[in-house]
Length: 260
Image (cartoon, rainbow, N blue to C red; front, side, top):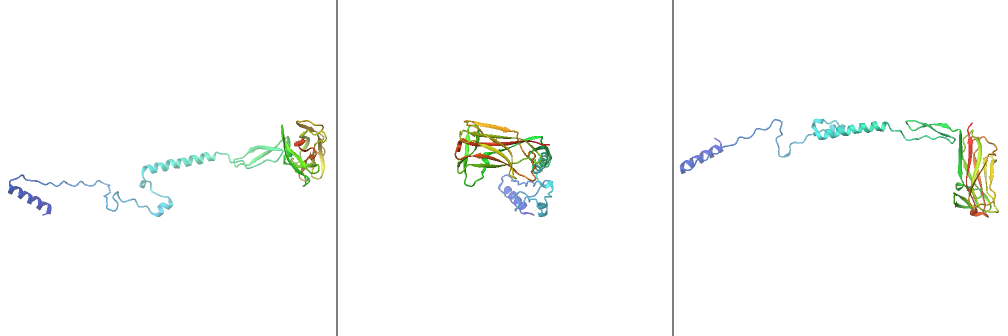
């Protein structure tokens, strides 16, 4: 006989002896555990955690049934976005990496960014006097700004020239030479020259008179018209003068050409 039953019998006898009311103690049956439910344990009140092997973690191969449904749905949505992004990126044009030589233009751009060039029938190459370098190391120049243009003028030293290289396409035929300048000095005139690197003059333009404005002149009188870039380089001379100072400011020159 168990202790609980002995206790019940003793209380019953006491009740009968005292003439009181019989007290019955009834034991409630314990509920049967649900099928599949985890029995809580001391070390793991919330249930024993799922054990994952190191191989499963490092390889990324985890059974989906071991993860919450929300995590699986989030991973599926994320994977779909990655695939969609890759598809969009595959349709994008790569950055243009190719260039075309002077006298030609881009005709076709490939998917990898390279270009196919097409030569233009005509073109113009311009150079600024502001980028010019004096021929003499003793010459001092400064930037000159006038209404309608920015150039360079001579501050001190003997009268000199500014030298600026000009790039022309090989085989082109030079058709004209232009000069933009400011000349407000009555005593000194300015000039621009187109030269080849073998010290051959191809074209020349000189200013005349004095005017308080920017002027533009051009000529079609050109010698040695065909450009031979394999043997020669080409450059422009701009005349400057310390005596004229800021009253003589070359601004730019341009070379027009056509392709055969």
